[in-house]
Amino acid sequence: MRSRRFALTLLILGSLGVLGTCALQWVSASISVLSGVGTRTFAASGSQLLPQATAWAVLALAGSLGYIALRGWLRQAVGVIVAIAGALIGVLAVDFGLNPVVDAAGESLVDVQIRPWWIAMGLCALVIAAAGLMAVAWSRPWAALGSKYETQGARRQRPASPWDSLDAGQDPTMSDPDAPQSPA
Image (tube, rainbow, N blue to C red; front, top):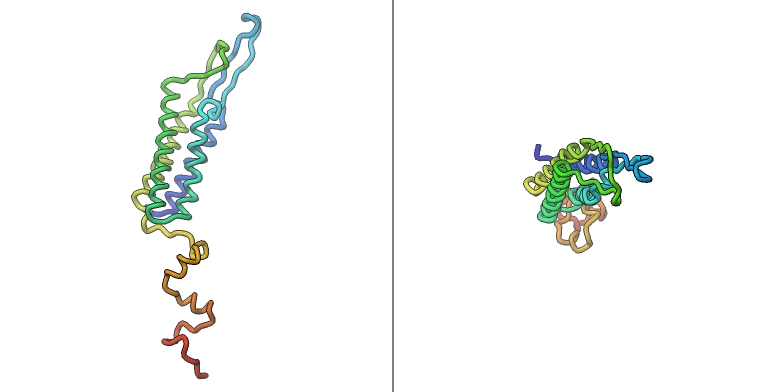
């Protein structure tokens, strides 16, 4: 269970879950107009009510790229940031659930209906936080991007592999690569 693929899957699904629930309609109500003569409907999505949650979810989704591209303590730092983002999304969801404040630009709302999408967002936030903590705890041995993405200085510091020898036109099975080869 200590795999990078599992943590990446959790992170991506949790982030997309938060973004998806924020796109849904969380609140609907009626607003009285013309001193109570008529009414009009009011609806608000999660991203309108909690725009910070959308921003934190995008940050967590970007953290999945950090899981792939970085290594060592940098990947662990990304894991800490992702875990914090998940915790903040969870706090926003619970805060809205306990105290659903809907701003209708000073209008008085009648017949307010609040849908439970904040619960789904809170669960997705837990998944994001878990993916962040997994990266903090287990990301040291995870593989990173290949050497073609490294700088020239970093490539020179590594010892040459047999594939590098083949790329240079040398036979890696020979003990001395500079010695002339005799036909067999």
